[in-house]
Length: 105
Image (cartoon, rainbow, N blue to C red; front, side, top):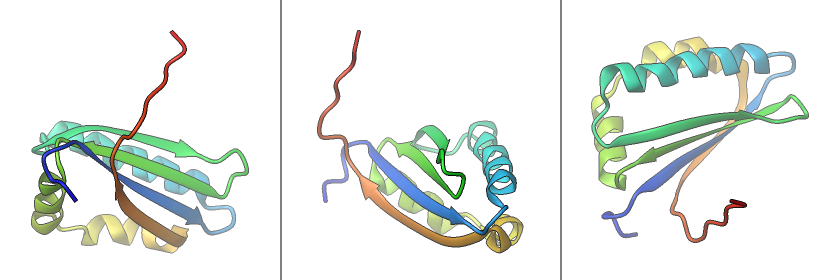
């Protein structure tokens, strides 16, 4: 995988029954920390919830994959994980790059 292009880290969360609202709120607060803490290479984050009410997707864009990997190595997630682990049934993440974009403008 090339490392000199922007990359999206996409997490798909399946919430435990009745826990999606709480998960969405906690994760939305955590995203503000990216902005407030000036995470190197971080470009944007988007947080989406499913209409069905059991899943949410977080899409975080970094200037390139090395910035995300460096941030992961330096960050202590234990406090944040303690806030959300009991809300999540399953989580799956992966790196993606943009291959096409179409706008209706």
